[in-house]
Amino acid sequence: MNGGAETVDVATRLADVHDGIAAAARASGRDPREITLVAVSKRKPAAMIRAAYAAGQRDFGENYAQELRDKARELEDLDALRWHFIGPFQSNKARLLVGRATLLHSVSEQRHLEAVAARAQSIGVEQRVLVQLNLSGESTKHGVAGATLAALLRASETLEGVRIEGLMTMPPADDDDVTARCFAELRVLRDAHGGVQRLPQLSMGMSHDYALAIAHGSTCVRVGTAIFGSR
Image (cartoon, rainbow, N blue to C red; front, side, top):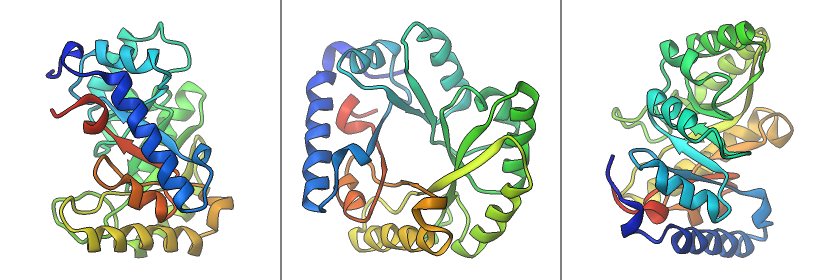
């Protein structure tokens, strides 16, 4: 893994991101405490996570199931550290993630829900998940179309051990107009399927666009480069 802790002032970068989140929230008439910062630590060493933890960060995001498992083991001495899985979900990775990750951000098929539920039931937990939607139509992006959301929500109601808490999306990195449209559409979909009472979480926004995401109602921003440096 790249990115030595000695080359990046994690605490300063983290403080800058918190300041940016607070400013974006205030500009939108929101309380910054409504927004969870997930520090995306994929491919970064445990020392950098420890530095962020020492600066007060508690939520960390990983893209690969084995890496999340290994880091969770290495850092199990850190109380109240919460792992988020933000990479493409695969049903055969449920055993590595369910009960270990606080929140799975990228469930997008009924078989994913079934795999999560089966694993959760087997170890006696309830796993929180988000449904990932592909709202840009890009073939390289994971997620389902908005028209599929209702069916997934119905499916989850018949399964024990899994709870859909909200929605996630990843728009293009280089088109602000499409990004804004995707963020707005995610919020519209949430509101059309029970609103904040049923789906309180909207996971959208990364290092380059989290302020825009907050303006559109994001409750969870996933920021890596701005905290840990480039990969």
